[in-house]
Length: 148
Length: 197
Image (cartoon, each protein chain N blue to C red):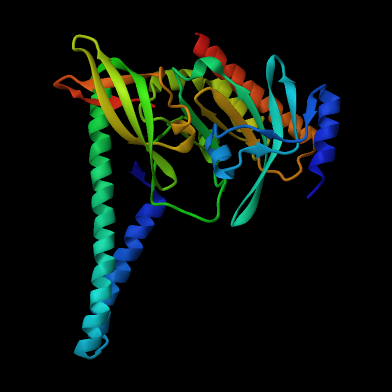
């Protein structure tokens, strides 16, 4: 997952609106009770913005780590053994549960499970027997990138 | 808008294609997923151009407002291993007007040296795409072709061997459908050749 323009806009909107609600009433001379009520709403907005920003940062760090594995990892393959749909969707994308046989040269074969949020057109292609490229962290083969 | 049935009937007759009232294509590419029903109506199938077989059809769906595309779907069988996802989308193309999300599946914007290409399209791939292979695919000839030859509203999506070319014109007429088929077939042939090498 990665943040897009809409996500950046949402963070900006919630953050700025939240800050305005937090400090606006006091600056405009509203009474204490009104200021606190409006500020508490603003605080919720700021928390939402902070949560989205944290998630964006988290996905960015994860992407950077995956890029590092892709650049420096050991290229292997992952054969899909089982495909399970969790019936959970994230932004219209299904969360897929894949049971894989991971084959990394020099490390060997192992069975692992991986949960991935995928676009529908990708999820539809996931089927038992499909072989996907995989890149394993040279320091920890259990840490791998599945290329789909 | 014009009459798609008449346009497709005339186009199928002129090109020797088999006319089909409606055809379900499946959720093969992002645009088809957007439509939810993934059905083209009317449609025609057969030899689209050169040696390339496929389906051409009218795709209409409503996501707050009605979107209309004319699409050509062909297979590029050997492409999945080398380029699982490649999207070359006309800048500013819209495919929905209802839900907008702040997070999406990860992809990489493809770098190209062509200003003309970048002015016209947004090109993206899987983040784990081999960039050298992609540079070979986007040869100067292909870049020049994409920047100058296809209809102005042409886009294409390659996803796991399915290549969907599209134009946004409501009623492109037989000539417009011909241009769509030619552009899609050209891209398919180019990708297949690069995969073969």
